[in-house]
Length: 322
Image (cartoon, rainbow, N blue to C red):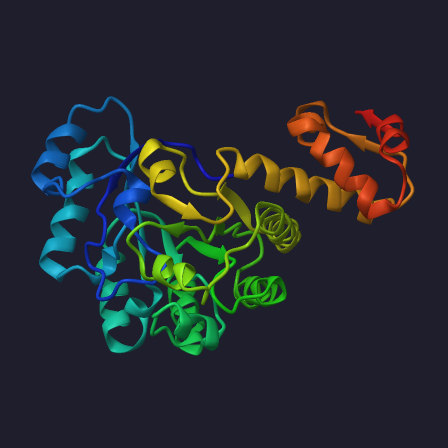
């Protein structure tokens, strides 16, 4: 069991990004606009007042793509926090390939790294090309192996509904990464539906009919299937859906946006798991999970009825709280 820390997150939109993915607008996603990024010195001063160890997080952009001197200054800030503090960051997986990747690993090994989260929207070359990403799937998996062998705990960020992407391809991506995960490692997983955000290349494609986003139901079913497979493979899902906020809500032009997307996806996962385990019922569920079936107008119960072929009222009658 990994220790829980107070998380202090800093968002660095587009910092370190060498390119702009067709679906991405990190300023809308994070709510951080065109302002000066917080400096390592400011972070260090704030951390020095913390009474207990913390998890210092850097999200947005590609942290490992920063110039080494700048990256090291941000990492050094953790040493002003109480002893035992750790650093977590998100990054482009291509940064960790080859000799540059090995040099990065050697640098990072000198710091108390909590989790390295890798943005791996897809391992399908056609999908990546359609998203204006130059990732090489083989190189991505090679980088994951390098980080694993160096002893780092990893997180993976996957997406659904990208141009040219299918639900089956996403599950294959998850399986390929799971194959590299050491037993008991419980790598973190974030799952994001692809939304059409204002000002992105994807919006232009949507306007001209080149790209059609998933419906909410399609995205929920896809995310639920991913969550179920992820739990079976030993991942620890820590977020499903983008962080809700006014900036994001006001920027969505089209796509499967819902303020409770994560709850809907977990409802789908639970419905699938229960019916797969016992197609005809009865079904037992812990008290703390019953809302995954009864919430959102009994969405989980209705989905179980669809999956099992049993009327919804009979499904509900066959559910028992453990």
